[in-house]
Length: 163
Image (cartoon, rainbow, N blue to C red; front, side, top):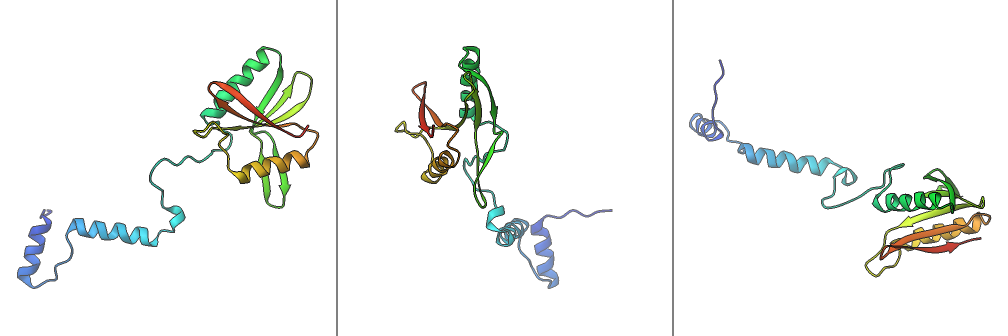
């Protein structure tokens, strides 16, 4: 047999019998939640709002759109084939660059392409440290053309580094 009672009935019974009165169920739950967050390292607490993190091997919307552009390039004979995130370049100790697209052009030239979104001003949406990495890669691997691409008003803009 079980007895069901509300928190108010339990508190009233404890007051009448001289027992201690603890927090209500809602207060106890709120306190437990605060303790949980106090004991959880900050890096494990999920941030609020839209935070997108890149998943290896999965294309974002811009990369998917660019892959469709590359498919057209293949059909039109300007490109032989391409791979997504197939090459990882070592730039220095503990510094790597994963290339978005490795492309074999119709003339046999292998190019590395980095796809970027755009800021509201139409400029490529990458931070300075990423651009520096791209330039360093182009200098360390001079036999490959490195292209940064981004879309402005439906047209793919290209910034070329290296060959």
